Image (cartoon, rainbow, N blue to C red; front, side, top):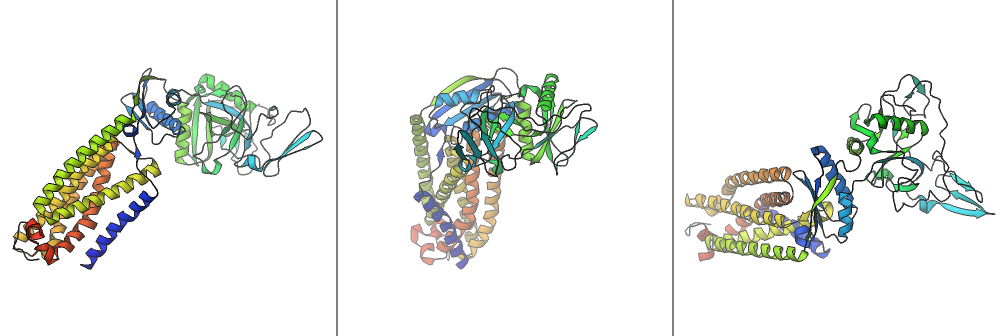
Length: 534
């Protein structure tokens, strides 16, 4: 008896305490497009496209939309079309322009790198018309009146180290590299030029992100924020020297470490060789959508077979992401809007109210029937459903904040369907108790034995539901995935509630003689055995 009381108490506290925190903190589930309104854009490729190219386009569009601050945009493939649902979007014209833009992958020389916090740490003093700028680490740049500022990218403390780009095919001669850097082969009879830095106009390189990523001008762009160590780093970049059209293919490979093998087109190889000769032993940034994806240092002057190996401290996922960016550049396919639909939040609220009303009406009929059929045990079902609803609200609210989970009408439908699964679990247990009691056993002796046998059936039924929900989630697209997710989540909650709440509560109630034999409402009457002994 004691273990049932402990189990019941812990299960109730495990739901009520988080629920209280959620309510006090005013946290609530994030509503989807159909419930709070927004815009839905359908993009269709202008010509036949491969599935991996479309998948990459979906990833790029999702990253772009995230920059708008849209909570959990739904970007999915439906056939060959890309459907972009943007719930709660205020600037709809900007969103429409952003999702369909085919940006350009660019290769830009790195003129200067500003570490995180550079702007705050930099000091400037002026004496007799001259300007001296001191950066973190002790590096200084002095500009006399009327003189142009020369920016260096090799002084310790002012330059963030980048990945090394080395030739995989160049023959023969070996160049001397910095300590810890693997030897790099160079083409024969090619002189090694100094690492010249082009003259930068005064004020062109300031630690402030440029408003426009103009390929013909010097710009300052941020490094990708997926790299925690370099998040907040800014790059001052020269005009674009190449675009992604020069890249033929790129693949992530593991040799001594993860890297990216890049192959260029015939024309692209010529462009890259010219770039390598011009910026030998200097960093060249790979830029997409105004973000520096990588900034490798060119360690060879010529790449005879049109191949280059970009290596560095890459993880597998980072290498694969860089390969995808190089392979497809920006959007790998040209898209056009085939349909744009504005969703009214009023319509969504009306649909939600209607759906909730229908669900509550159906739930009310079910609960009334359970009360009439199982008497006091019907009240156990009511309590169990309320506890499961509280747990579901807490999880949905928390997941909305943590991973941007969105509750849509399809998800509400999944929750309503799961109510039937939950009620079935109670019916299986109560019917098993009926069989045990009718065979001559007491209610007390039937509880644990009946639950042990009933729980196997409950577990098997819930696992079937979970398998179906998982298959729907991974194979379906769009709103069907929301239905599958909430159906699966509710089913998993049913398993926990059945074990930690239903059985302990029934055991406590049924062991009490007053509840067991309380006339029409008693447990014995609900089990169809009025003369049963508690």
